[in-house]
Image 1 (cartoon, one colour):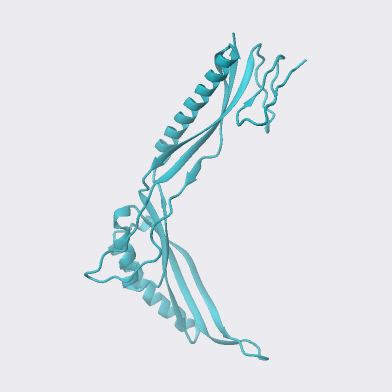
Image 2 (cartoon, rainbow, N blue to C red):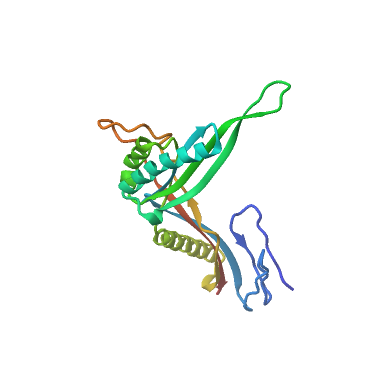
Length: 244
């Protein structure tokens, strides 16, 4: 007969098994036979890094009486913006067109069908800035070159695996310490780890302290940007075998 003790008020699930099989929660994972006690522990740990990459979108919105004129005007302005992007040192691999749109503009009058009064064209690019310290200057240069649509930035860690590994190690140490506590309380010892499963990686981006790009002037200060700190997390589910 199999006896199971369920403690719903605790975040750690403790299963005491006197038989030879253990059924996992979601995946119904089959574990090897054991004469010991199986303990499932969930652990969460975080690592913190200052972001070193920023992504921003910038573009041009133009209006004209007809569609061709709107697109031509937009292309001319966008050429200036792209020249400024390249002059700021943004590599071609970090420049990606994210949207080109052409939409009619309507006038609405009472008891009258909508009437087209002109066209609006827009062209937007997504830029990856790999030197966060220069982000303010890049934003100012974009606006000075004619960009009238700027959104972002969003920050990230370019190579996050080292930070995730740091979080994984901390989570595993946390799980081991908790297993030792349970074993000592029960008068047992930790024999071995039966299984380890990793949840989805967690990423919590910082909130940038920049609301909008300001027009560039030769003697003006650069647009202020604060990258903050990014949190990268790891979640582990570890099953231990306890015994005497």
